[in-house]
Amino acid sequence: MAIKNQLKTAVLLAVLTALLLWIGSFWGQGGLIFGLIFALVINFGSYFFSDKIVLAIYRAKQVEEKDAPELYKIVREVAHLAQIPMPKVYIIPSANPNALATGRNPKHAVVACTQGIIELLSKDELKGVIAHEMSHIKNRDILIQTIAATIAGVISYIAMVARWGAIFGGFGGDRDNGGSNAIQLLVLAIITPILAMILQLAISRSREYLADESAAKTLHNSFGLSNALEKLEKGIKHNPMVMGGEATSALFIANPFSAKGFINILSTHPPIEERIKKLRDMQV
Image: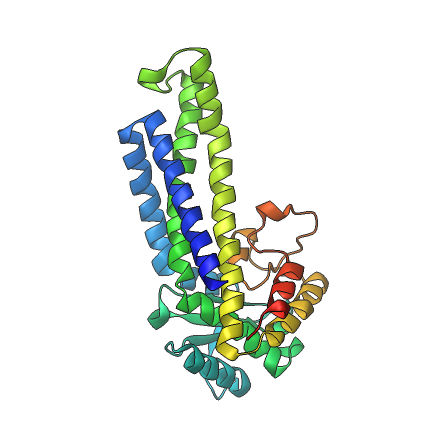
């Protein structure tokens, strides 16, 4: 299943890239290059500084072994099993039961747990959650998400330029031919960025499935994580996160905000019931 998830991510990234190149054929090289540079600068900053920004948003505090011995011991044990360097450990002062991993690579990684998840889960369940977050670090999901965000950002930029071009009557240059141009503009300005967003979210969901699987294989136990997800789903409904916002929800093991009414295709996470089923069907 890991190979399947990796292949799915590669295909989705390829489709997203193809979508970008196809857009370039409509608009021309100049706008495409400018949009690419703009998105690269924004995402370069996000890649290198997002950990500090996110930790500040959620008022996370770094802890040492003397401050949280049980949590620190679990993180160190799982890091050893996953064969990655020991990440920094943070605690988020929130009753919302959740956890996240951030940092640009395994040598500059952070694992953060909320106070709520520490109090809610058993040792084995918390170990499953930490293994999931370690898998994100080991699988370099932050880099993959940054690449996807860069491509989607360029597409959104060009779509914005196309909308302004439509307002001021300048779209498509050599392809400006009445009715055909109107259809092209509709696709470029409205439909294409929606497709890019859907592809980006699909990549995020595929990495969640892969992290679940990697965690179970690291611990040779899928039930700790599956039981944890079951508790987290109920716990988040009772204690939705009050800090931050939806823009950061993809970083957490489960959407920390109330997601009732969301369409699955527009979610950064797969449905928890599907994740639980896949984990409990695994042979590890």
